[in-house]
Length: 419
Ligand code: ADP
Ligand code: MG
Image 1 (cartoon, helix red, strand yellow):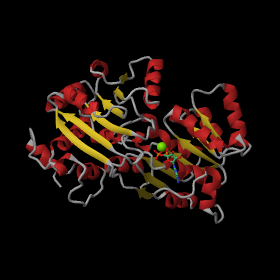
Image 2 (cartoon, helix red, strand yellow; image 1 turned 90 degrees about the vertical axis):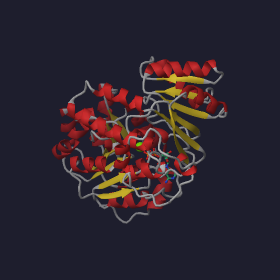
Image 3 (cartoon, protein in one colour; image 1 turned 90 degrees about the horizontal axis):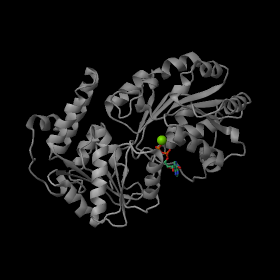
Image 4 (tube, helix red, strand yellow; image 1 turned 45 degrees about the horizontal axis):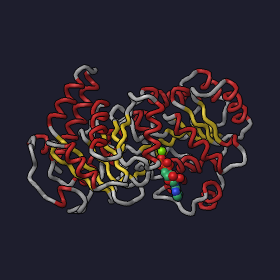
C-alpha cells in the first residue's frame, strides 16, 4: 500500500497537468486503496490517467488490457515522454519480434516497468500467463471494458476470458473503464469481471454543445449538399452504412463542388490512411465514411456529424455524434431517418444466429423510438444511458426548438420509450 502521496504533485510531475479532470482524483484514490473500481466516462474524459497515475505510484506492474494495437503504441510512447527510462511502459502484442518480447520481459522482471499494455489475444497465450505468474502485479486495468458485453458496440469474445485468466495469474484489484454506459452493458461488465461490488464512478454523458436533429429521409443527398455549402472550410463527417453508399455519396459531393473523401474498410490501407490524414490536416472538409472511421481519432473541431443512414443502435449513434465538438465549440448532429432503412437492416440480420438477431432487433427498436419520438433528443439519449435529464427544454435539439407532431409514428414503439 502506498504511503500518503501528494496526488497533485504527482500529476504535475508525471503528466504536466495542473488539475484533475472530472472525478479522476476520486477514482485514483480508490485504486490506490486497492479497491475494485468501475469508471464510466465519455470519450475524451480522461480515463487513461485513472490507471496510469496509480500505476506509477504503486509498487509492481499494472497490467493494462486494451483492444487496439495502434492506440497501445501511442499510449506507451506518451508515458515514455515523461520518463528517463523507456522501460517504464511496454506493450505485448502480436506485432512484436521475439527479441523485442525478451527485452520487455527483462525490464519487467528487473522491476523497471510500471505499465504493461496487453492485447486480449496475447493475454490468453499460455506462455504469457506463465510469465505473468512470476510478476508482482499492482492491479489490472481493463480499458474499453464494453468489449466484454454483447450489448456493447464492439463485442470481443476474448474479453470474456479475462476474469479466469486473472484468477490464474494471481488476484489483484481490477479497474474497468468504458465510455459505454447503458445499464445493460454496465451490469454485464461487472458481472463478468466478478466486480459487482466495485465502486462505480459515473460521469454525466451530456454533451451540452451538441445539437441533435432527425430529418425524414426523402431527398437526403440534396439536403446534405445544401447544408455543407454553409460549412465550407469546416470539418464534417458523414456516416453511411454501406461501402457502396460511401463511394457514391462522396462522388456526388465532389461533383457538387464540395471537398469530400471516402473512407471504409474495403479500401486499401494506404488510400484509407491518406484520406484520413487529409481530413486531419484540413485539406478536405468532409469525410464520408462507414463506422470504420473514428475509433481513436481525436480531431477537436469537427463541426458536423451527419448520418445518411440511421445507425444500428443508439449507443453507436451517441459514440459517432460524440466526435463533433470535442473542443466544446459548435457541433451539429443530423440523422436522416426512414422506416425503410430499418426494414433493410432487419432483413440483413436474418442470416445471423438467433441470439444475435434478438439483440440486434432490440437495439434497432430503441433507435426507431428515438428517431420517431417527439421527446427532447437529449433527454432520450441520456435516458438510454440511465441518466435523468431534468431540464424541460434543452434548447439544442429539433424537438425542443420546433415542437412537432410525430412523423410516420409507429405508435407502440414510441410508447415503449415514453418517460
Ligand atoms: P478517454 O480514454 O476517456 O477517451 P483519454 O485518456 O484519451 O480519454 O484523455 C483525453 C485527453 O485528455 C488526452 O489528451 C489527455 O492528455 C487529456 N487529459 C487527461 N487528464 C487530463 C487532466 N487532468 N488535465 C488536462 N488534460 C487531461
Ligand atoms: Mg481511452
